Image 1 (cartoon, rainbow, N blue to C red):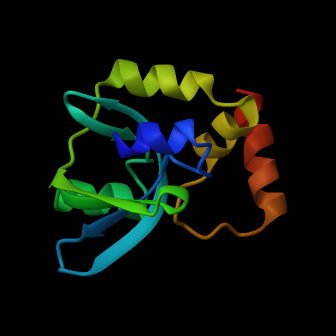
Image 2: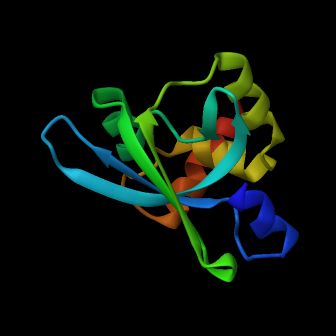
Length: 130
């Protein structure tokens, strides 16, 4: 309900949430992600399964998220287990991303250092020529 109110009053970034994870070594981590949808099954966000976040969730699915809705002076906290959406949802979402984002996601691993911008472009060009 607070998110709906935030949208109605044009609060900035109502879909932005902070997600906190704990990996298998009990190391805590948090980062900002975008809420993609809300259903009776829970909150849906998208991540690369090979990212630090994806690996943390695979090792320990207990997560918490916080929304800060500054304009309404509200905070929403949600805690629970994180599960993967089905492959069809992932594929459908991926297909809606701009082509440059699809290529970038396909040739680089989120959370891993890249050699250089030029090496990323080279990988993208190789990927496109397949």
